[in-house]
Image (cartoon, rainbow, N blue to C red):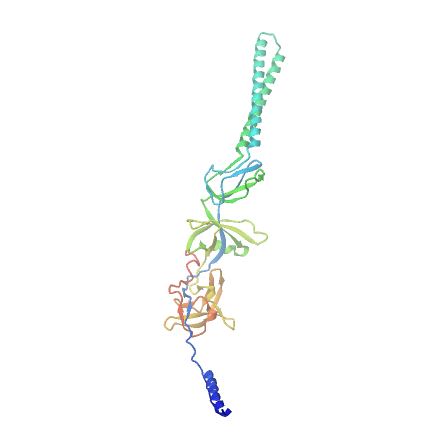
Length: 374
């Protein structure tokens, strides 16, 4: 075949392929982004301060043996509930039992010597009445009897001490509570007074916090105090300051403060993380919003995304920040009561973008756990 005969159809086919590749396709429609919203509530922020702490018992005791010895039994573990008199651990009783036996024998010997000395005195007293012995001889027997009586009392006291030592081989709880720590195991040799078991009483529970020295005035001027558990942020427990350390910590420059929970329930457990919230004076023009709602543009000025429920679009609005707190950001101006703002993902939006609420029941800002109401 002639080369020109088959080259023309191939060129036409290649040109058609190039033109098809260069043709523009319609872009797919942009997906509507879901956003988390928060409603603005003015005048409910207040001047609050939040301190993170740990739930601890008010009364907690380290229990140990009053004598040294080898641990041969431990009857409780961490978390065990005990009552007064419950056995906790026991030492090897061999040595203290032998000491008690020796003290018992010494007391018996002293009793025998005293009875003999008393009989001797009684006989010499009769002989003295008959004028067969002198008064000096009678005085010697009286002194011997008195000395043996003192030895008997000493032996009985040592026997009582030995009996107590034998009883000290068993460690028992001195009150109702819960075992929070165990410091000794079976086979370990412990010294007198060494902590073996830690028992905490359940009557009172409190939160231990550290307050910087420049913020003690906030603690004194607070109108109300509340405790919010991280595990249960929707509940606020009424609280009061029980103790403020008289001296500042040399390393952290903070004061150790104990805040008592007025009516704790079963949800408040030892070791849980909790926030102590101090409620101060409120500002009617300020609003507390989530910290994640603050948007910083290229100029660095703070702003928030306002959600329009009618158009379902977002627009950027500059605001004035009153500062950041542990429970959110305080906006002093730029927001109106009842407006909806985007609470998360603000750096992925653009003006006029179509969005949809991710959670129709979004909580108003501030959230319930932000500050206790007076």
